Image (cartoon, rainbow, N blue to C red; front, side, top):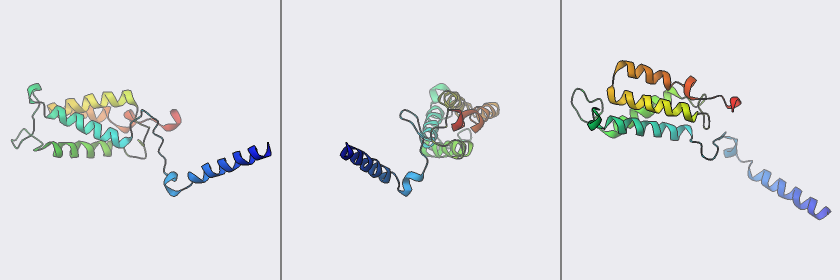
Length: 141
């Protein structure tokens, strides 16, 4: 019995020391199936820019005319990613803090704003996509 106790203690100590490096000090509370903040930023920029490119739906599409804000898909994705990163600071929207259903509403608003490029759609998207609306306090989970 004493052998088993020592073996269990040794295993616990070894497992504990494996997790004690500097990298483990970083909080990464993303559960399986949850998207990280960075993944959500990429996802919303992809969705909005795919919509922007949909000329059959009446969206501007990429190009250099006066009504086309983005010349390339990369320009669009970079702009939307920058906007999302500003709206969702890591301190308020760290990994695992983005509410799935609220994110879905935000993504739909972002796609509408990307296509119409209208002032009111942009305001609605900013409101729906604010950290206050999309991100949740980890204490609430």
